[in-house]
Every structure is written in C-alpha cells, then in structure tokens.
Image 1: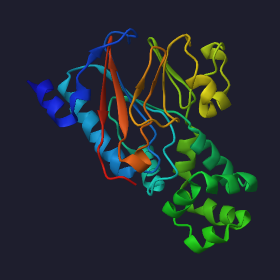
Image 2 (image 1 turned 90 degrees about the vertical axis):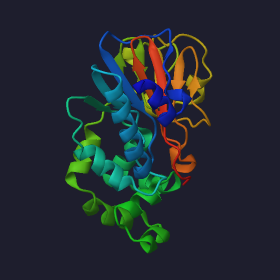
Image 3 (image 1 turned 120 degrees about the horizontal axis):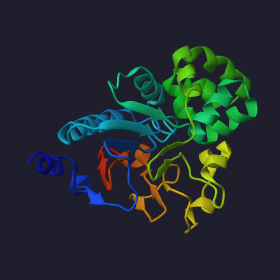
Length: 261
C-alpha cells in the first residue's frame, strides 16, 4: 500500500525493477546527480529520498552525491552550506569531487588562469551566490576576483570541498563523477579521468569491471546501459534533478520536476 502511494508521488520511475548488478544484503543506496547550484531542487529531492527510504523499511542507507554541486545554477553557496552542515542521521554520506569543484578550489587558491576559465563554465553564478558584485565580475579581472572571492567563502565550505573523494565502490557498482578510462583497472584510475572523461568512456561498450554510475554528461533522460548508468539530467536548466536508488538486485529512480533555470 505504501509503495503504491510512492508511485503516485514520484511517478512510475519509482517502481523497482531487477538489474544484473547487485548490492550487498541490507544495503540501500541513493546516488544523486549533478546539482549545479539548484538548492530548490536539492531540498525537494532530499525530501523525496527521505520519504522513499522510510517507506521501504530498515536498511543500511547510504547517500552518494556524484559531484558538481556548484556553478551554472543560482544558489551554489546555499547548496554547499546545506550539504556541509546537514545532519543525515545514521546514513553514511559520500561526496564525490566533480570537475566544477576542482576548478572552484583552484580558483580559490589564486590560480588566475583557472579563474578566467571558471567564468566560462558557470563560475559567474557561483561568485554571485557568495556575494561578489556583478560589476566586478563584468570587469573580468582575474586578480580582482580572486582577491574579492577568497574572504567570502566560509572556512567550513573550503574544508568540506577538500574532504571530497573520487570514487565509491559498493557491491557490483562503482560511483564516480564523470566516468572511468576503459581498459584501466578501477583501482588504477587517474583522478583527472574520474572527473573529466567523456567520449572515451561514453562510447565504450565493454566491461569496466563494475556497473559505473556517473553524472557529468547531460542527457534528457537517465542513460541506463549494461555497463553504465548516467544520471545527469541537466538540473540547472531542466528542473529535473535525478537520484538512482539501489537495493539488492533492484534499481529505481526519483526525480524532481521543478522550474527550469
């Protein structure tokens, strides 16, 4: 009865279906795709996960954020604040470092070339969310922006971002931000590939050594293939932030349907 109500609340995608990859007994995982500054969608999706998790009964629940919390959307500072301070109770929570967090940290560290690059990939919205004046951003002087930005970022935000990891492996699944390099063992992957790889990974039809769950590459719908599952549904522009849910040999999806950016 409860699950039938959930289907009505979350749509048909919340119905579990069998998968070839499995998790260890008693484990339940929710993997969340690229948030990109959409605080509104994040809070919505976390509420949906809470309700779904409670309805499905006891399990060792784990939440994995696949990275790219920041940039492009309007509320990156609020997203980081929420996730850096939220009490997730007894759930284990993992945060993967996305390529946008990597650029954020390099710009914050004073790299002027990176600051210029960051402005081209959505950093302007993040600077604004932390209070950098628009007129300063419009001038586009990297040294001025670095000088202004650093004191605006709370120390606990910086510590939170530096504590992020590159990969999580559970059962038959491997969780990364962007993907993995084909023909390289999972335990030998380079961090830059895990955060930046695209076509070489997306176009590979072979076995990666696990079912890879990733974000980074936007698709209109979830991409569920035999060797990988892509869940970046372009939240910052589409209003659709997606979570993949796993338990045993089943998988299902939860998603928002918020306003477009």
